[in-house]
Image (cartoon, rainbow, N blue to C red; front, side, top):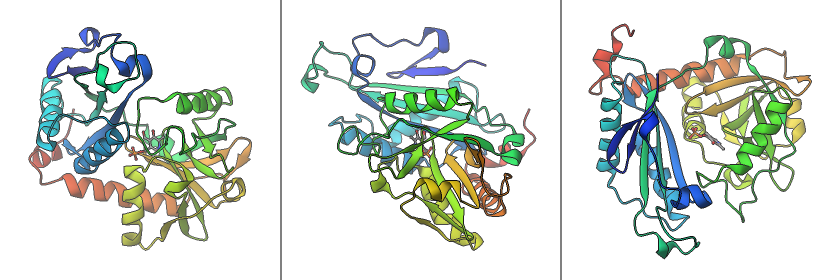
Length: 305
Ligand SMILES: Cc1ncc(COP(=O)(O)O)c(C=O)c1O
């Protein structure tokens, strides 16, 4: 099924959604975005995504010209137009805010109004098999952006650093690439955050390693304790990953996905571990609990088709 796209307040199907080639998002990658998903037909952690969108935009001196309520409405309208929501399949949502249309100059004053695009489509969840088996990652040579350059904390449309990392991972037959920072410490995956498990504790690189402050990562840091697992930040090196008992990646659409191999080397037993499984169960529980009982929760509890 195709996507439904809201371009500056007007809804189009995938084939007809267009943006000017003079939009600085297209010309220069000048823009920010968020990816969300629903559970029980309700947007999960919407407030945090809006907060991060505004924080990213402000680092580009870009204003998001909508209130939080207007952003939420735009998501709801686009989902409604896509006929996805409570009772049906879960939704994938992306919002992009770019500098807008203007002359060929980096001067922000050239662009009077930002462009706002919302994409809605049914969420394609990873097969459960991948959670049972785990995935292989590659420790790629592409270095994560220096925070003094295009700071990875900005969730920006300028994704060349990530794309190059992923290209290398794909060439090496891996599902994802783990990137190091300019100091040689582990930073994150190209589209996800990274955790290793050692002696029952789950560890993830600190924000100042130069990475995106993932909302799933944050949720895992908060909910680990509820299932008796210590989850904390720590500076990590290659050996911490290669010699870990378990490892996993986190993102909104992949949740908590076990990593069982790094290049040719098995992690731990080479199978997803118990700590990862417990955190995944806690994460899914937390996500469902925090969305059930909201407007669409009851309908969504009915069997979906
Ligand atoms: C580079 C990068 N790191 C981490 C993440 C995970 O972020 P979140 O958990 O907010 O989806 C993403 C998600 O797209 C990402 O692109």
